[in-house]
Amino acid sequence: MCGIVGYVGPRPALDVVVEGLRRLEYRGYDSAGVAIVGDNELQIAKKAGRIENLDKLIASESATRAITGNTGMGHTRWATHGAPNDRNAHPHLDASGRIAVVHNGIIENFSALRAELESAGVEFVSETDTETVAHLVAAHLTAHGGSLADATRAVARRLQGAFTLVLLDAEQPEVVVAARRNSPLVLGVGYGETFLGSDVAAFIEYTREAVELGQDQVVEIRRDGYTITGFDGTPVTGRPFHIDWDLAAAEKGGFDYFMLKEMQEQPGAVRDTLLGHLVDGQIMLDEQRLDRQDLREIDKVFIVACGTAYHAGLIGKQAIEHWTRIPVEVEMASEFRYRDPVLSRQTLVVAISQSGETADTLEAVRHAREQNAKVLSICNTNGAQIPRESDAVLYTHAGPEIGVAATKTFVAQVAAVELVGLALAQARGTKYGDEITTEFDALCAVPDQISAALAAMEPVRELAREIASAKAILFIGRHVGYPVALEGALKLKELAYMHAEGFAAGELKHGPIALIEDGLPVVVVMPSPTGRPVLHQKMLSNVAEIKARGARTIVIAEAGDAAAREHADHLIEVPALPTLMSPFVTTIPLQVLAAEIALARGCDIDKPRNLAKSVTVE
Ligand code: F6R
Image (cartoon, rainbow, N blue to C red; front, top):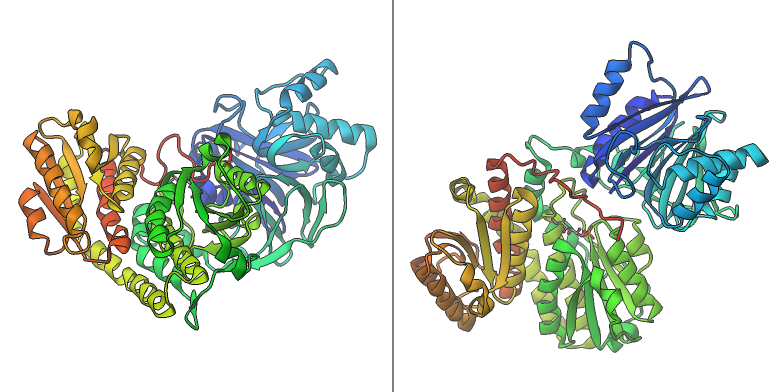
């Protein structure tokens, strides 16, 4: 949510900033704006809607005012306070036009601050919480002088809530200053140029050297480098890191949509996530601030996550319980901390988050740590807040995922949570070393099977076009097939704006079967006839029941499942895998189905309406 770019260097700042905003588009936004300092004057352009609208505005005004300068910042806004219109778009200025601010997050005490400023005669031009910061910083500089960084520190100390703020001062054109609390911001270090970005995609075209910023820190960037301090002015050293992917990874590579490319990258995402995690027969995590004894003592696991990551957690529960015999509960992160879950030192909370920024998951992690539980996070973003606040981390190496709908990060999360299951089984001795190796090897065989599934998707695309005008689609599954059904329904909702529901097949006759009517497509995720014969049999009965009531059955079954064929109006075969690994391939047709239906309905599958890639507000 919200994208932020900052730049100081020799290049035309407008180009760097607008290009950076484009690379952050996937985060979700509804207006865009830039501020550039040139000739000791701030030049602002902002517009509701897509970045193309901002481009048009800048082009249409170029005859009368060219936006030039080498210091600048940009913002894509996902509205929280105030409607997504031109007026509320960022940047915001103080009354004199000296200070410009962009902001990601929510300033919780903004009403009090606004009232204070209004009683001092300040007139607000927007409804945003952000504008208060521009006025406060300007007032501080007028009263105390000093640098923009000094004023930012003083104001940041007064703010409550979550924020990344980036500021420009027309009178200090060689610097950009940023403040960070609970909202993402990273620094990019080039030769004679320095960058800020909500994530590294903002500047990956120019440098792969980045620096993590911590909580409650202010950074000043200049051409020759940067200075980081705490809000109290104490110098701080940021943690440098090298970005291990490049521009090509963040581009479409010949596909019409990022999502289509990212679906094809799923074998690699799983392969890279597993790589190097079995060393001398031992499962290794990436960062381990827990010792083996801590893991041995775990007697309860909670998995907390949102959306697709939650579905990965539901699959992980089956694997962890099966391999370790430790009870596992999977909770939506948004519910977890508000219901006072029972946690202790022996509880392991596994937080799954692609972005590592999701506010609900981050707060769940904090709640767990306050209650002395141990936290292990699974994350796709190096240096993000959730891994930084965790006791142990396992990174998914899926590379950048730009399409808003999670695809390759989902399969990578399933691989990672299964690795966590093996690590726990090893620490607790519930599996012998050779059994761990066998399971790990089975996981390593998965990428080839995903490739095989992806290669056989043409009939699914055809089917998708046939059923694209359906009113609704239902998805049913059992055991690990149930979270796959939920994930299939979520993908369809978010991409095609179609009513879709996932159900545990056994629950159908307790209510949902009333939804079945003539011709309603129902996608069935079939259990394996050999791996789970009892469930397979039960599922056949469920399919017979809905077919008898007119459903059009689309059955996803293991290759060679003859019984499934008999019950299917459309049969989609996927490669056979051990039960706990079957979601890696049963998910594929559901992703393809959702994407193709959405495309047939004219939807933009990379940027579904109302959605943000990373949800940094609760
Ligand atoms: C759906 C989707 C979302 C995310 C959810 C959690 O396709 O992408 O449901 O899975 O917002 O995001 P992360 O994993 O970044 O915490």
